[in-house]
Image 1 (cartoon, rainbow, N blue to C red):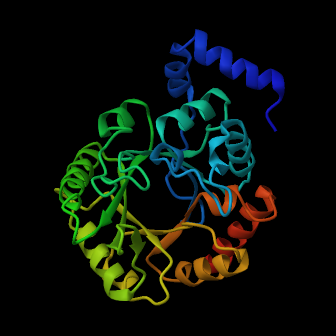
Image 2 (cartoon, one colour):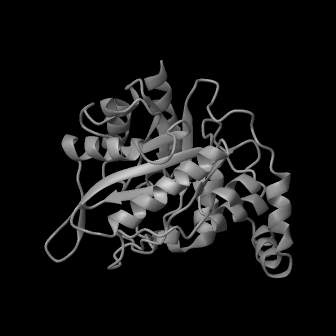
Length: 297
């Protein structure tokens, strides 16, 4: 929990000492390697609010309470198996001010402009970290969301922007984590994630070819039901948690299957760990860590 005194100090700092953010970036202790000693990577994701995606389960505003979100993140980051955070500048900076990111991997979220449910959702503008800012602030890489919708021309500028970001990160020797997701428009305009092997494999191959080099590119993918998409690249992959289902055990089994593939290096999970059905963040993180450990054996 964040004590009342600590919370008020964070609010005071935000209002009266904006230069504290730059000092916190500069003071952060970076760990020497991206991967853990076991060669895996386990990140907690917290970039959903900046895209207006606040709902979890039946609660449309679950992630709107910032103090609650930060408290949950502090619990997750304190777990020894969690290597770090994927987040937008506001959340990264709040956790820096709370002294929670020393010796952790930090990946900055770059494009959040495709607001959830908006008419322009697929034209996902880069409104967060830039490659230059990620390098200057001593972060470990950048993440970008790439939703592919053949019927929506907004896919094209997003593809182009992601390619530029991959090149700019690679030029600085920084990880580019691309999340390619094939979607299709439903009657009425709603978007549905395609989970079929052909759709996922196509998305993987498109994302793998972005930019001037793929040397620093990783892919962030939903856990597929088979290995077709995972076999479509030699790039390192991490499994994303996605929207949590009502069956947490089923989510864990799905991640475990994907983690056994030799190209999959770890997990990047947000809402499923931060807002588990029983409310026990520590237990949810521990269960995911054990799945990752078992797959590595």
